Length: 298
Image (tube, rainbow, N blue to C red):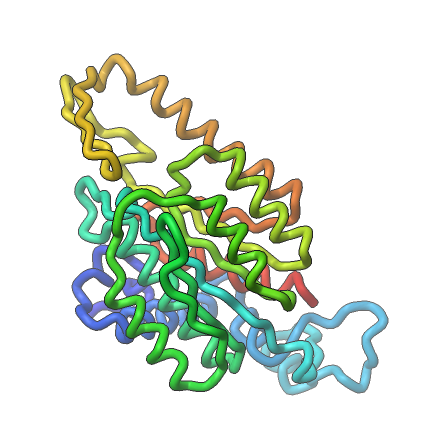
């Protein structure tokens, strides 16, 4: 029987058929791991407490939590704890790609989105779901009721990568739709011109939204484990291209690093959380980024 920590590994998660169980196992494995990590105490803090800061009223310190963690925490008020979240899913055909991993980029994104929905609903935070390819496809308004988790998982489990995508245009439409300050979590491989996408996510940030950009690539897209002549197919156009993998490997890896670094640098400058992931990575990195972003709000 896998341990809780093993449920953070993509190769184990793919053996679990039901999306609701995948989400629960990822979250429970993550929370179990927190107790043995440098983030010990975070599992208490993210739900009901925040770290004591200078200027807080001493009477709000929770001494029971102090006794358990040896750190000062204050109880959050309801207005502090609730944050409205939107899961924003790219349905690009390129998200279906996988080289040898059992989970495609799309499968990985779906599992991660389901786990985040599970966490938010159990924290009584409203969360909604928006999907897009060339245009917006689904728009489920945020709710915090337990039934919302079922609604989100029902949509996520039926989603399939569909074809070409328009990342910047759709994020602009989403920004126009969302009137109140929210946490916007974008799941995409970002295989498009970076400049319009960066411009649009900056606009989301300038409107007061918190943004987490989950940049999900396949393990092979990051490490390029190919040799000799390789026949590649563009997943969106269907065009084939035969290349000499050995001759272009160095240039390709440089280009990927430059793309990721561009997003990382521009997101940092705009106060946006950039989370670079590939399909071989355990899910805890992404969940820690979510909790870190949430903590930074208070």
